[in-house]
Image (cartoon, rainbow, N blue to C red; front, side, top):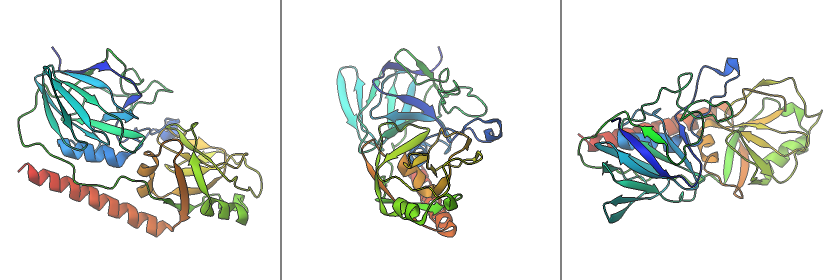
Length: 319
């Protein structure tokens, strides 16, 4: 019998996501991948997986899973979990790995101050994926389990039939709180907006709309004034591109963004700040501040160094 995690209950959206389906945008295929790839990478580091190993991206709260394997090791970043062994229940803190035996049940609780949490399993999932990635893109039926969110009755096949006993790891403290103002590089079409429109972007506070999804974060607040219309010849989009349609309300493009778009882009979120956007729930507030390309690149380099140091620190604990 194949090793698996059986989905006993699923009360919210849960998607298998890795770091994305790269190299396919020229064919019109979105990258997808984790909204908060920082939390995904931390989760993988805790259980000893490569950065890009697919994990479950959980919205608001997680499912209940039952181990159908000799053993499995899991960690949840962004939510505490309850483990039931026989009739005994215990709580596992967010960021703490735990080894589960056959028949144990794990329920991932509510996300702690974030829209999403991530559940990683040692060794990852034994699924083929589509176009080089397990990332789930439901609009096209790609990745995951039949290209859809997981649901009750699914069996998530595991790459490992069992995991060895060892000292469990816990993720070092990491501040996942979104910044009050997100750094952006103006452009590439800032000339399509008036000076007042640019000031509006940088001086306003916006509210995350309930109409937001993995494709784009829609923002409510002060409209941004266009200088010469709101249609352009469609061109490429990037993670964190901020499009401004005819109503003047910005849309920040996220993981499932289309590969091209025909609205002018007033700015692009610095890549180091993009994962924080994935943590914002509807109703949260957000502001923007301008930065330069060099500063944005330095911020990303600093983030990568911190993630590398975290992985090395966790690895030393197992030696």
